[in-house]
Amino acid sequence: MFGSLLSDSAFAIAPIWRRLNRWGTAAVEINDRHIALWQPGASAAELAPLPAGLVVAGVPQKAAALGDLLGDLVLQAGLNLRSAAALLPSGQTEWRLLRLEPDAGLNGKRLPLGEGQGNLQQLPMAGPGEWLALLNKSETIDSWIEVYAIADLELDFLEVAELAQLRALGIELGDPKAADCLLLDLQASASLFTFWQGGQPVYRHCMGPALGAGFMEELNGLLQRLEDGQKRLQQQPLWLVGSELLEPGLLEGLQKSSKKELQLAPLARAFSADPLTDAAFAGLIGTAQRIADG
Image (cartoon, rainbow, N blue to C red; front, side, top):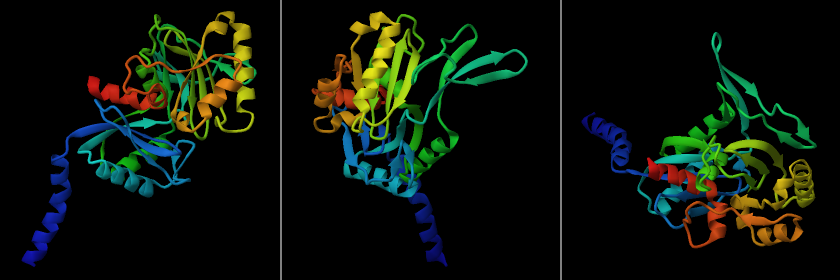
């Protein structure tokens, strides 16, 4: 009986003791193709491929297996991590226009609300007493929380890739002085196009995967419709971010087929010696930057 009590106590105390001896925090991105970790101050990401089907369209399908793989990557990389800042894919998110009603409290309107140009949807600008918020489905967030719990990592915070990418580019959300930006986030299941103006999303359109049939035809048509309405955008390059940039030959193929100038998104601060790596992990770097800034 005495031995059993000691054994039970040891098993209970061990996980607590391990956590007390860990202190690091890393930005973590998990998408359909891979897991990536980036600690503040690092010059490169720790990267591990994912078996097909564990994550589909940015949503965990097998939380237990995914959590185990994340925990294994942390151990194999020799990282002394206690917590993680989770970067959530943008594909499952939507913008809401929030307004504080005097009698009803906080009220949210589903977006997009403005007039569309074909498949390109215009978003309204927030007025006095209003602000835009980027929201994700609660069940998706719960699934990601479960993944990190299984990996034995505390969650410092979760944020959507779209906002983290802006931070890496040096653009502050809602800043009226922020430069205009045409941004294309390339992911395995879907790609997200956004036109940012004055720190706010003006147009947003979810597209198919960059490696899919008809992608460039759709992109060229979308850009043409946008430029027809706003001639000044004809001289604006399209900035590319997202992990699909790591696919061999993808960047060259897109640049060759595009009717518009395509550039790797220039980060406000270079984090590696390779602009392609910086653009591919722009969201992860933006989250790591948030950790470093406290």
